[in-house]
Length: 117
Image: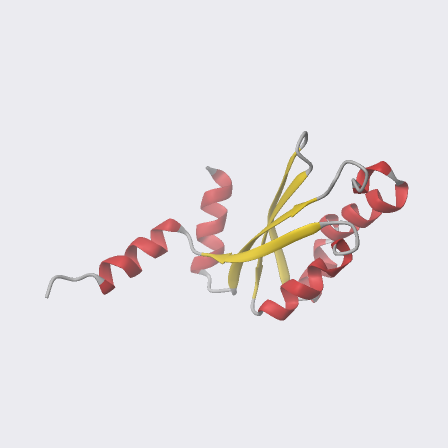
């Protein structure tokens, strides 16, 4: 619930678009199987100041431990920044990132476009 509130608050400030990234890998390509991969993942998610310089705000990150899926929620002003931010994962991970809206915002939009005539 707190993460949802943070997402709504972030979007209300109009600091850019929120993206949900989904990355996955095989057991053999798990970044935590090597020191280098562990450092890569830690660097990507832990250094929020460096991320901010790239125009990325990390809102949350989650992992499904047994399925080797990463879910990372970020906010950025442009798509190109999101692509650049996730480039370090490309050699060993398969993924996608999609722009999302808080449900509250979507229901307001839906209500505006579906007014009775």
